[in-house]
Length: 271
Image 1: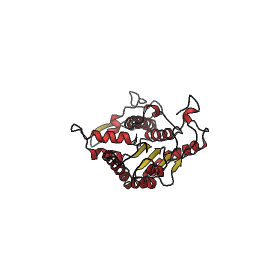
Image 2: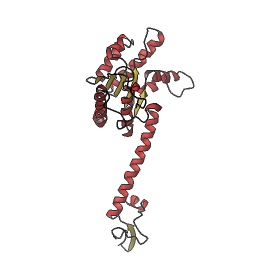
Image 3: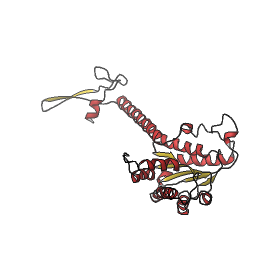
Image 4: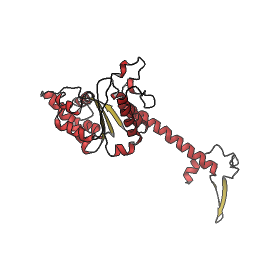
């Protein structure tokens, strides 16, 4: 406490060591065995000021951390400012139901993330899937939750970059980063159509490896796709074992967003 008091020079204390607000003397002298020592004490005004300064510092530190997380999250320019508060509702009942579910998820983030709860959104293009997941990501970042907003193409590109001898990362270390991030937002899953070529076999293994690791460690994962879970297998060719994992990770939270493309409703649409 003494070190804290010495480093604290409250503006409400005048040159005579008296609080200018409450009038309490903050410089005191005691004598022990003939030795006099002078020290500073804190009145309630000074304690309050110190607490306010600490809260202000914590807030600034949290804002800086949130800004770093946002940069790391890979949210694109179009969605970097997407929020629940700025979203337009009342246009599509299906979107509104999903909107409420997403907002509630973020309000209860300590519980939902701790328990590894995931969500799977699917529906046609333009119905608001990516916008909703971006709102969730930005909301969680503001709470200083580490998130990553990406897709399979970006993941595979990043992992392939480690094949270069000059890369400072290994393939496995990068996979671990994707697997261990607190919340992974997997956008547009199923865009790629898998075949039995050697390249697609590698991509299948990569996708399963990341999903399986997150499943086993109960990491929260939010998916968006144009396809239902069955269509991921039948149309996109994603391995059944991978889709089974996704189904279990999002059990009870598979939501279809229907309706016409919201991008076409108005020129000033948020999408």
